[in-house]
Every structure is written in structure tokens, then in C-alpha cells.
Amino acid sequence: MALAALVLMAWRRPWHRPVPRALWAALAGYGAILGIMNVLIYQAFAHIPIGIAVGVEVMGPLAIVLAASRRPRDFLWLACAVSGLALLLPWHPEKVLAEKVLAGQTLDPRGLLLAGGAAVCWASYIVAGRRVAAALGTDAVAWGMVVAAVIVVPPLLVLTGSPALASPQALGMGLAIAVLSSALPYGLEIGAMRRLSASLFGMLLSAAPAVAALTGWALLGERLTPDQCLAIGLIVLACAGTAATSARPAPRQAASSSGTKSG
Image 1 (cartoon, rainbow, N blue to C red):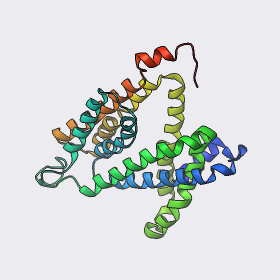
Image 2: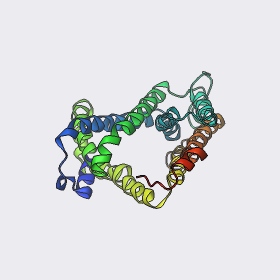
Image 3: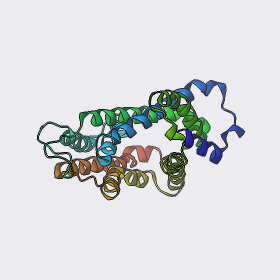
Image 4: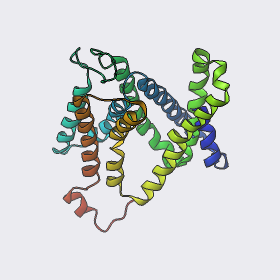
């Protein structure tokens, strides 16, 4: 996170546009949520497969969208999401995590709890980010990552730090992760949002759990059971369906808003 903050600050140079004093408290809360979310999801990766962790994490923004909707068809997407989450929960002690581990090892509840915490943080991140993003734009991400690093990094260094963290190999790997997890994705997302409709962007983003599962399989050898794959598929379907239908105004709304251009 510290390296990501440096990369984002060098990229955005947000100090050229001072932060209004009235936004300091909101920006501090936004950054704190961003930092905690990062810690929780990376810890979840240490206990459960990446695809499952991301599948649970995306339940946060999905819950935000479904909570604001009152349309009957959205209950279908809610049912898909709940069914997928239910399949991931370790109801059966004999459920195996992956073929490469010892038979009888179950999906670690700690990983699910950590990913669930990351989902709550992601939902809170969206709510907290609305105010700062409206005022600061992409600069909010750079300042938020600085706040996250200031809040989270010092205590973690005290608890887990070692001289090995300052080695060139560790710093190089940390810089690569900072670029791949923060600077590059944010830059690509901004470019995509400028060129794609909101519904198409949302549907592409909904593939994150499946992409994460494929990445875990290709790079880490994580192999999911059939019901875990089905669970991820249901969550992806719920996210994609919600994105596809939420961007379409109802006929009555479209008729009443015709001739009026909104921001």
C-alpha cells in the first residue's frame, strides 16, 4: 500500500489541486476503509482460493445495488447471489477445498470471514467514496491510498515487519503488486468507463470472480470443486444480471425524463 500510494501520487500529482478542508474527515474515512479492505482481502487470499475470496468480496457492491432496487426481477439476482454464497459456506465438514490438498480439508472459515469483511468494506468504500470522488475525481484514490498507508502500514510493520522487507527482491515484488493492484487497474478502469456504457462496464467487471479463479488455477495451482465453481458462476450471473438491468430505466421513467439531459 505504501508503494501504491507513491505510484498514484507520482501519476496523479494531486497536490496541485488542494483538498478542501471540509473534505478532510470524509477523505480520512475513505482512506481508512480502503486500507482495511486491502488488508482483509489479502489475508483472505492466504486462507482460501482467490476466486472464492473475490466471489465473496463482490457481494458487497452487489448488495448496495440490490438494496436500492425494488423491482421484482432483482429478486432473481438476489436468489442467485444467495445460492452462490450458500454453496461456498462450509455446511458439510467433508467438503474438500481442492484436489491438491489432503482429503477432508474444508474451506477455511477464517478466509470466508476475512473475505466477508472485505465485502463489507467494499460496500462502505462505495458509499464513502461518493462524496470525495465527486469533489476530487481520480485524485481521491491517490489521497485515499496515502491515508490508507499512513493508517495501516505502521502497525503492520511493527507486528510483522522484518529486515527482509527492505531487500531489493521484496521491494521489487511489492512495487509490481502496487502497479498491478492499484495504478494500472485504476487507469484502465477510467479509460474503460469513458468508452463503455455503464451496463457493459458492470457486466465486464462482474467477471472478476471467474477471472480470479482462472488466475489462481493457472498461477497457483488452485483447483476448485464442482460446487465451488457453480457458486462462483451464480455470483457472476447475479452481478452481470444486476449490471445489465440496473442501467435500463423503466418505461415510465424514460418517458418522463425525455427531453431532459442529466449529468
